[in-house]
Length: 287
Length: 103
Image (cartoon, one colour):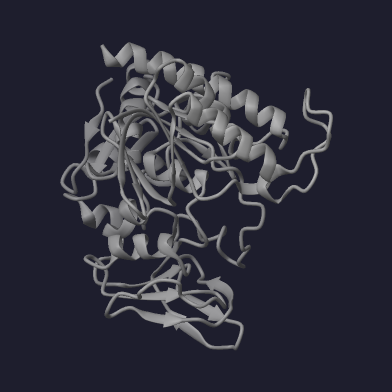
């Protein structure tokens, strides 16, 4: 059992890990990569760092710094989080248990905007298979995605639904598609239906009838993970108070996933604040 | 006021024929976000007396969920005069629910 599991290894997550590990709080950082910062070539506006530095260099230094204080860093992609007093974080490589979780996976800057998706939210479009599979007993559903996150959502749906179709929106599936699941690789043009979802239309003009659409494009971002655990989300942001606490006890969020100024400096500051809150929570509940 | 457990047997009397607005929380035990929503509804029920608060366990009352096309949980429906007037899908905190209910 970790005291703090930090999901995301960018500036917000690593900054949080710096504070928690120095406070002797057992810390695990789970990161897929360094996120948006990894792609920044030159940083010239970060406090105290006069010589231009690349995002990769800054991340590498931060990782070493965090590890020197005893935090563990694992490279894994998180697929789901559940809460029953403590947190269970499911990754591709394993499961991790934590007293608190800090979500710091950044913001998805280029999520596919599919016609009809937002309009049908709550009317057949779902972002949480574990919550909503129940309503599609014996029905045909589509899972939008092509990677491990889509596979995870499929695994939740298959025991319940009648038929599942993996719609990859133009990508090749990166997973072993479970038996009985059909695959549509054509680009998606729209999710349609008068009141509730009725069909998916493809760019090549075909359409398939479905009762539900489960969105699992790319990897699960902070907002998707927050939804699954019951944290309040507004648009593409997680709602936190000034201490970076969400409405779920022990769940915090920091960095681009809470919105505001998308800068390293704000991510680092929010990471530090989330860490302080997680440390206080851990100490209150560990004894 | 205590939160009323709704079944198809008392739905008409408690919700459709209610003299005051009713907020109905559709939930299930296996839904993490619903377990967060429940206590918020309970707390609001203690505080607000002009609205009736009710819960439908979708595991036990699938027909009611289907009737109102509930496809995600938690879903909160507000009934006024026997009709659904407002819908909230996904977790909502106390302040959000208060503004939904206009209280």
